[in-house]
Length: 87
Figure 1 (cartoon, one colour):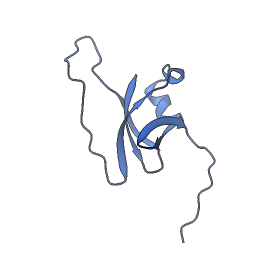
Figure 2 (tube, helix red, strand yellow):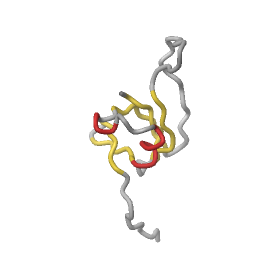
Figure 3 (cartoon, one colour):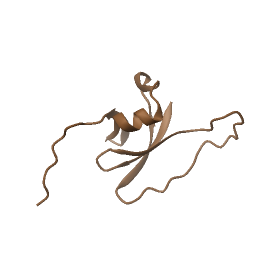
Figure 4 (cartoon, one colour):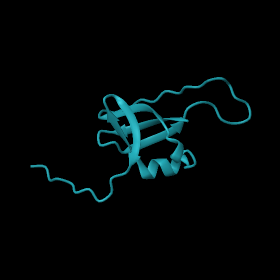
C-alpha cells in the first residue's frame, strides 16, 4: 500500500492520505494534488507490511519520513530528542 505524505524538513508528517479512490463507486481518479508550503516536501511512500494494519491517524502520530538517497521511507518518531539552541 502506498500513501501520500506531506512532511517538514525534520520528517514530521503534516498530512497523510491513501492513494486511490475509496467507497462503493470508484471513479478511476487515482491522484489528488497538494500544494506544499516552503520547507515542506510531498512523497509517495510504501507502507511496510508490518505497519499496514495501522490507521492513517496512527501512522501520522507514530511515524516520520526519512529520505535517504532520494528514497522516502517511514521510520518511528524520534521521541525525547534534545533540541539544540540557535545562536
